[in-house]
Image 1 (cartoon, helix red, strand yellow):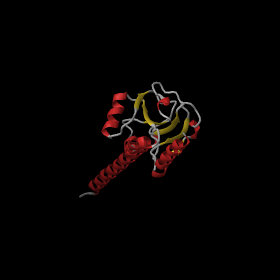
Image 2: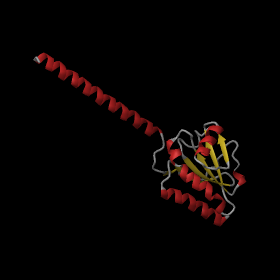
Image 3: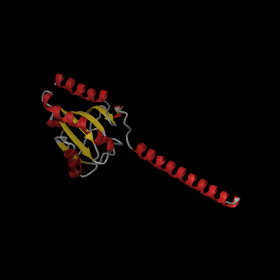
Image 4: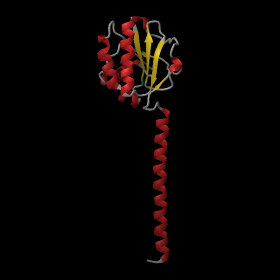
Length: 178
């Protein structure tokens, strides 16, 4: 093999190596952009909404002493990963005094959200299709709302175990006061 042939082979290998590195970098950059566009796994308590009155067309806060409002999307993987908690939340709602209702609001059509909930075996009281832009920037989000529509607590993102228990603690505390 001549020096020119060896140089051609090495050049070809170098170009292939650069192409592979660029493809891998582009793949990770796109994945990072997707992850940044969604609410992260870590939970943040959004106290900016606490104390404010929410008005969502079709939602009826007065139907129960407390409403757990879930802002979900049938295409959000954090929402889907949170379904076991929502299933537990739904199963326990009758054991808390007068109970509480669970309302889901989504920017998607009602039937799409209901289908996602049914597949995940999550029973809710009401699904509302409404714009959620002014409510919360991402999904999932959980609001605890009193009978008059005022926000008592707000969580954004996928809840960790401690935050899940805090939700149940707030519900229990509210039932003792009611």
